[in-house]
Length: 278
Image (cartoon, rainbow, N blue to C red):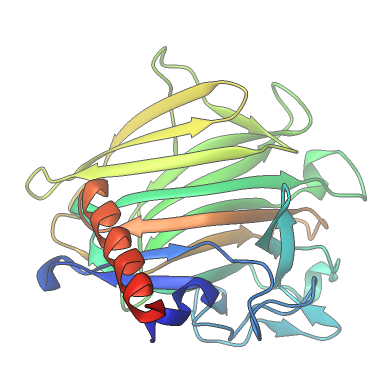
């Protein structure tokens, strides 16, 4: 990669300490030649992004008549979407689809951030016509390390999604806020999710923040995940009824060590750019 063209890339891997992995930052810049143009273009296979069906990154995400991930818009910026906008029949869809990119590092030191919103199904507002979404960290064998899920529910509102998490092969757990209440987000965000993991022997702890019209926080334990290595990170689509709702996201980043190091790395890229232009 030539740093003089770094601003044109949708994903930038920034290496810091070899043993800690590299930071991955995806900003999906608009107008980047050859990347994610025009709106609606298939994302699978572009700039390292792959759609894995039924949880198998690298498998083709294409289905007859369209694709599962495409170029969209988040607020006024170019972004990426995943979901059922093409409205495939349920019989032709996988149970899950995972739009992911390589992002290396140890789970116990990772810091994750993403901006997102969920667009509603045009078929029906009932929960049975809405699919679930989330963001996931996987290892090299595509086994789940940690997934933050957004699960469609009808209470407290018909457009609500409950925030949950799943560690490894364990069961899905409801994320609880500081008042020990379930957490919800709603269609038509926008939201920002931040997640930070801290080393704690074999059982790293994590804290999450979801910011929209208000700020909600939750904590959990990544049991038996100490020293496990992240291989890929991305968005998950859990197909429950093949609704045509979808998640759109932008500014996704995974940093395998404190965020201040990422800032130093990005500063280094800026200096390299200036040197090349000089």
